[in-house]
Length: 297
Image (cartoon, rainbow, N blue to C red; front, side, top):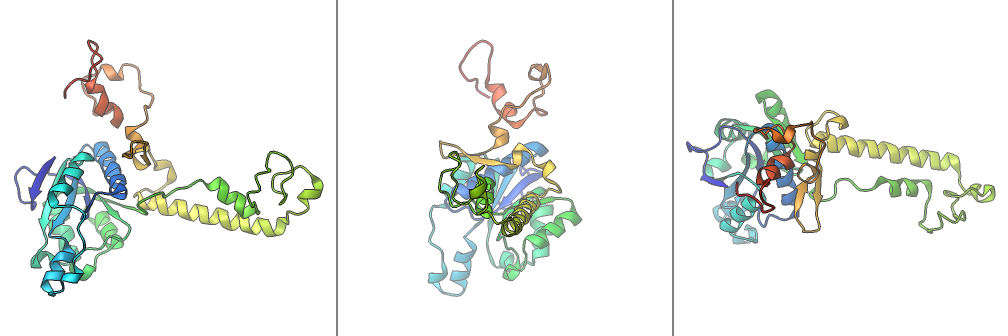
């Protein structure tokens, strides 16, 4: 991973897929963001980049106001942070000094000078509560609007955890299920899963119809939020790059890194792998017809 202090360096990538944060500890939520970032970067053919700050903004304001109690407890050092970012596949990290100039910079100036001119951001991924600029005046809506005007995509993580859970159980609750676990016996006490006409009388259709309708509307609303947060226009645009899974090894990866997709005939015999799905781009160059051992890249 390349590391830069500030963004005025000749070796910095001219364009990148960017995420912004303090990344103290690089916890599982951060890992999910980084997996998504790496997938989007690979899809666009540009490096992934993390923008972080040193000192921590709250450390800076605690010192300025002479209130040490305002400073956050740090989980790790800057070296620890950089090591973890490299471990989770980030290709470039920019450490921006948080000083009086940056603290007083307007949100518009931060977007123009840092994100666009300084880092060449083509895709920006942030958390749901992301704020930036003088007095934290900038938010996701402002960043999204700027992206549309200045030509970069913007997405956010709605939650650092499970964004999507099984809806079947919630649907059953909307019908009145109380988890009696008699679905297979025909003796459901609520009449939801039974062919018994007498038991079915306990199911008040007019009442349950309204509850099921409300559940369905809320489900569609939640789906809309997820699609918008990913920077997409329609659920049809969701790809394996947008779905993140935590494996048994406690590592977070996008489905694009986990799923083997069907390839056209002869695709693996070509010299250029950049058009292949991400997992093949990463793994196929390590294979050899002469040995079962992984080859060095």
